[in-house]
Image 1 (cartoon, rainbow, N blue to C red):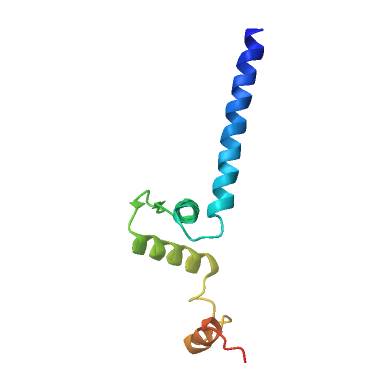
Image 2: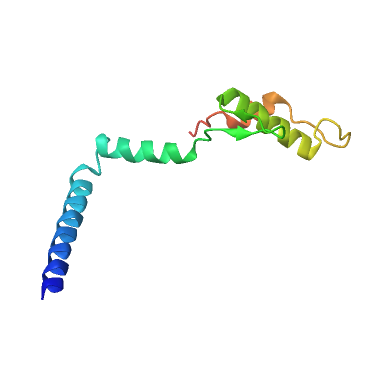
Length: 104
């Protein structure tokens, strides 16, 4: 009897919270408001690399140092500078590829 009442109270609370959650998304979902900003911030926090450890067990937290560590690791991994058969794409071709395309 007591467990049934407790279960019913938990069910009511869960139903209320779910209804409130759905209402917030319904009313604020199409606007770029605080709800969308909070979701975006949560996504950004998951994709940011806070630190990396180098091969010498050094902890890097500066974003530029992290970028340099990744660049060093992958250039060593693929031997890009030492392989004479590897050709480099000119920077202008990369910029042209990455620049926004104008569609007429």
